Amino acid sequence: QVHVVESGGGLVQAGGSLRLSCAASGTIRSNNRMGWYRQAPGKQRELVAHLTSDGSTNYAESVKGRFTISRDNAKNTVYLQMNSLKPEDTAVYYCNAHFPPDSYWGQGTQVTVSS
Image (tube, rainbow, N blue to C red):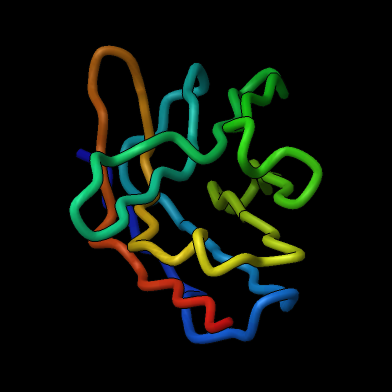
């Protein structure tokens, strides 16, 4: 079993920055992928970025060049540095820890970007 906890959301003005953190605890297998998804009101949950245990990354086109995902393997923690935030980045951000074939979600953290 894996427990996932996010932190770091909040309210920020357009152009500002936030950093989200996600810590996974429990039975952590070495072959894994951790990442961030978001869901805005009335929209489907979408991938923001993910990072595999071998260092491969994948970003949504809408955040490339503005967001950076990183991880601290020793702490089983993944971070999402969000710069140049836009009002359209407003959403609940969810951390996902994927340990094939299992996948675990955090409770979500609200990010609100005001114009």
